[in-house]
Image (tube, rainbow, N blue to C red):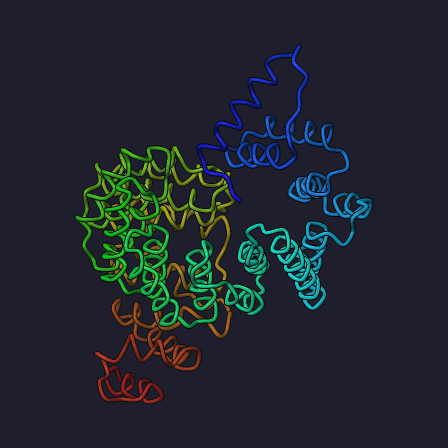
Length: 481
């Protein structure tokens, strides 16, 4: 029978007391010392767990469960071959523990049929042991704990169908039934049967409305399927059970973002920041909401918290620093914005991309001279590729910059023998705005050939009810030679 948390803690205290009394001979039964090992592993106490493992081997050098547990520790350290060799030397090769290990090894090597056979063998032996318990007038096991272990290990390796097969065999009244229902809901979701997953969770919650994990999973599934109101409601129930629950707070914030309730997101962030000051993700979301609300000072403070807590190797680091640069450019501190963007180079951003982002932010906030100089420098340093030409032309058009930056259009409108030119629709539009008619007709013809869909989107207000292939005729009539 599985021990309670109180019993485990008592065992750990007794174990640590015996360790401290060097003069007292040390002894503990194998199941007890393995429970202590579980406790240390759950607490991430690596050195204590390793010492406990060595003592277990010393006290019980021939115990199959202890030996297999040593193999699992090797496997968890990435030493699959050493673990397999260690297991091959265990005398009781037909034991449940050994067969379960070999079944997992088969799953890891995609030998699913072999794994299934070994799991079946484990269950047969478990059933035999249960019959022996019945003969001895002991309370027999119904196999549910082993079925749950098999189902969850199958899920870990992506064998969802096989997981369902074993989890479905767990009897409704067993202690493992609730956990199995959660796992089966996850299986349904993996197969895209979200409605079935939610039905199973609702059934579980009808039986036990205080099941925290079920509320969290329901909120998670509703978030994944964009059912924002249901996600918010499930998160609220989870928070009623555990007001400090990190996942529930995150999901409630996601639901608020989905419902465009941005003030609520900021309110949740204030609570979350107090409870989990070292997490960067919620601060990033809150900072970007403040950016969109044009609250740049507050956004800067929140994003700096996110930046401090985000590891340098995390892909979000680049996004955070780009947002921080935006808070500077929005306050017309372009030098600081540029310096911040330059800091992203160590994370893998190219100098050309730094210049483009700097120009984009500068144009967005009216710093035309700075943005123009950044684009000119980029063109001089790296030349014009079809992609960069498209990016610069689109950037200028989106910011309605035509006569104010003639130097840039002079470079972009030149024909560089790069046909087809992805930027042609934007170049045609710019040439028309600048009233450079000859270039307008040239680039319009190129645009119709290169990207008629984008050309139609850009020019449909200028030439309504006309197909793209007829735009050039319209331009000829509009601007005759």
